[in-house]
Length: 430
Ligand code: S3P
Image (cartoon, rainbow, N blue to C red; front, side, top):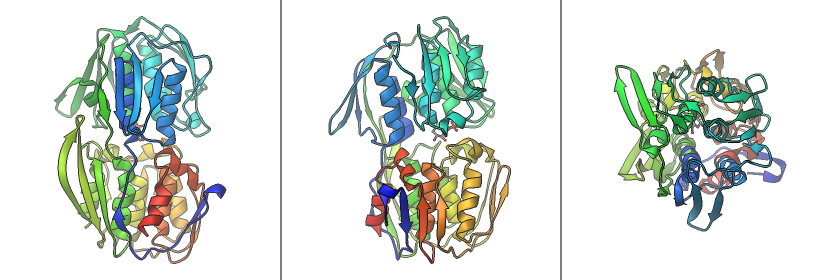
């Protein structure tokens, strides 16, 4: 495989992937651990903070807000300054490619005594921010944007109002943004969720929630001050997903994935792959820092197509690109529906996967809210693009392991956003 300097990787058909996969730490949990540590009183320790680009963006923004962060071989120590301790940043806060950084930080900045500007790269600057601007304005924040997109200028307010807010879109980032603004508001803020999304914020802040019928009500008391603690970050399930699929579809494979985060709001892909015929076993389940983790083993198997849609989509939202790769070599048709949210990710992931897999000879139909994948394709070589999206780069890399000819992934370095060692790990496993 080559060549990181040219931002291109060339993949060849694999004869089998065997070995242990060392995963990066979970980026969703890492962002939150850093942000919540900054808002706590005292020095928190974060064991195993990832070195990927997105979590680094969160750290650099926090440093600009006056938070001291030191790193050693175990992880990070973050000197929290409490709810009122952030200072006016001298420059715009650059969130890079990270939607989680921009959306969660916005909730915090809405409640400050100073104003700030949030920027991002070209991908992040094209993503919808109206979904956080609307509830933050309801709470009393003053926000200017570029037509609902970054850059965002947030005029902090120390008189935010608590709200009851029903999420119009299934999004953990929006949920978390409103709950964080709620921390800086007078009274109790409640977010109502109709479709379950990842619940790391609730777990990590110890928030109360109640489910009535199909709705979950999550509440935060304004002014609640946290004290420093130790966080231990599990392996990223969304990174594991690439190897769960690769280990399933590449013949003669046997992969071991230790210490994978198995938060039930994230693991729908395991159920789907098993329903398709995958051989995945879960061992040694335990709870670490409030999150379930376990060791996984996957062996190659014959997969069959499946229809996925409805509530599970929010659970597997980051795993759909790699599911599309599994579907293209599975026997029979796969339908992925109700997934229009994919069009608002780092790139339009429906069209990016359609583009890449079609180039490699898969038979796919693009729909507004998903893909219909004929299955049973023998993939061929070709040149595909990541569109600078980490998950598209990695998904196309896994597709390359199944192709009869060379697959050239352009923009391969995008993988560093969540999984800097991805290409090396893939190469080592064969
Ligand atoms: C995330 C939530 C999801 C997910 C993203 C991380 C989070 O985004 O796609 O990778 O950490 O809260 P949405 O909230 O936009 O669905």
